[in-house]
Amino acid sequence: MQEITFDDVRHDENIRVLVDNANHCLEMIGYTDHGPRHVGYVSKIAGEILRKLSMPQRRIELARIAGWVHDIGNMINRKHHGLNGAVMLFPILCDLGMSVTESSEICSAVGSHEEETGNPVSDISAALIIADKVDAHRARVRLKKYDMNDIHDRVNFAIQETNLTVVDNTITIEYTMDAHASPMDFLSIYLTRMQMCEKSAKFLGCKFALYINDVKLNRWDDPDDV
Ligand SMILES: [Fe+2]
Ligand SMILES: [Fe+2]
Image: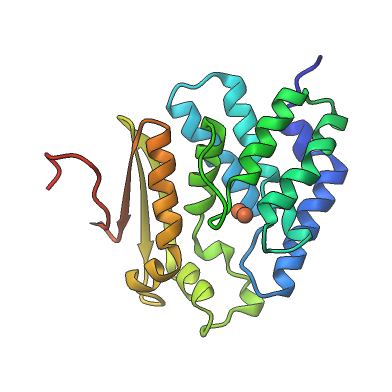
């Protein structure tokens, strides 16, 4: 059986429609961008995390595929979009020619990425969670609909730079924010997501470090790190 690649999935017309429709539904209820920019970023970063951890090439490819399709369940409803997306995807991926084993790996990762119901269940899943949860950036704000009273818009608009690195088994995310929002604003909406990143990094045998404007906001289990 021919292995399905990231490009096969990204260029599939049916999946393109699902990604666009999910993004449109979220736009209608005032959410930040969840379209090709977001899923493209998540694909790239999820693959990068596994590549830096020297995982096999096929695991990297599956993480990239999971990143591209992880949010399609939003076309059903925001609530439980991970679960809905996973159930929708299984036959779609099998029909594309992906093996049942790999399709189930993708669906497990997609179904485990939401804050309310998610937990890392595999290397692909852990990389997907981290890549998804760290994607906060000005580019996610829908500028025509920018609402300064919406804390998600303000926090994302304030983030001018997002930089993720994986060095010596430490996954570090650094945000550069301007005065449109404070680190406290960031934490008020991103705290559980950052905690999910910590848990996912630990699943991968790594530490997770969070910096905003050069200040470290979390600690890890390292007695020398005081
Ligand atoms: Fe999601
Ligand atoms: Fe997402």
